[in-house]
Length: 498
Image (cartoon, rainbow, N blue to C red; front, side, top):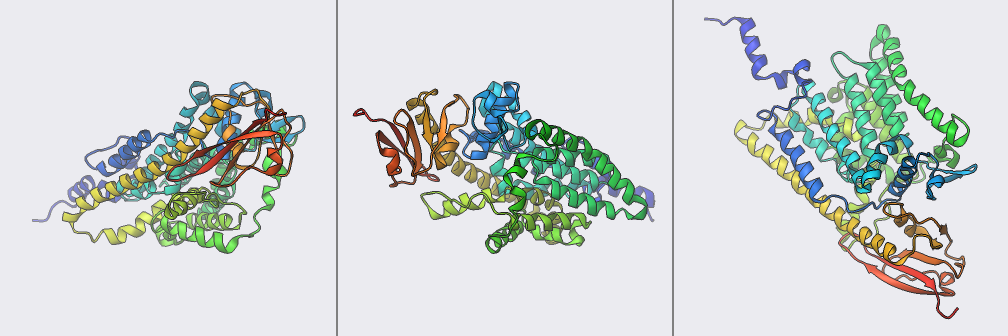
């Protein structure tokens, strides 16, 4: 006897809703642990490992700039010099930070409580990004376990342990993509999300514009104007906020510190062969099968391939990438990791949105796995992530702990109000965290340090301070050694003979 086809369809929908892609059910925020334990385990592993190796300090000069601007904001000003710090560019009568004041506004309350709480901002966004991708995957008929691709983004993991805007900006871009790719798109909200991503980091502007333009064109003649109009309307508040901030800091709504420094002219392709190879290879690995995002068959839209191709191109043409100076890791493999993982920063936005097509591509192979092997495969996936992130966190903590020890040594030996001459790598160690060094001065290696100044330089093991700096000063060397970073700290003070 044949069953009622309506009843059969209802049973199928109830049993395999996560594969059928019911948008309303997928949009529910409640996490169904029985069905989504893989996602829950990945999320729990991330939180536990993150807290177990919570960052001891900052290590990137950009982080020092954010910390200085957070201090300024907490003192009620957007000008860094009014809060006693020197991090930024002299514009008129004030020092202006080139970094996002809007991202820093989220850091300022944490700075006021305990500056190390600032790391939780990026971590919180990383967790939010996992839930956003979960929603995308479920709406497109994929299980939330495919969020493994997101959790294995080494650049995302690394920068979630910093105070930088890389993860928050990329996650807001991912939210914009998510709002566009719904069965019932929400272009106005998507525009707001894209605008927020640009507020957090200007790198997002060309990527968001490309995705939005191509997606709007895909809506057909009847829908292109409406889609583009709503996207533009959503971005408008962010554009006005940026213009207002620029007018207050540089005097022109259309000029910011980046344009004053001329960064817009730095997409020269000076290092194109090496950078292109690095980013193309990186995009194949982060996420796994990331190249699949360049095919409409797996992306389901031309907007994702367009944004991803542009992202790889911009990264390859830009003059700078993180991690070029791998330092002095004890082992060559650690030096390679130290260079490769931070180098994912500019690629991170397109790596996140590539997780959907990568999941579709890989699902064509994993669907052949016998049912009896699916549970061991999921357990192996969770274990692989836990081992990977724990190893990354352990190595990163070794790196930041050495910096923390160096920063403590500076605090113990240098009066905060003393004149201090610095150069090169040493500058980033003076961010105004627990104390403010108010009389820092930059000196070239061939410049003479005034006799009433201390001097600080950080060198590779075995290197010595510039000879010109040593005149009239007595220097003390303190070695700092770890698995991932090794330096000699030289502190010079006025010689007793003078």
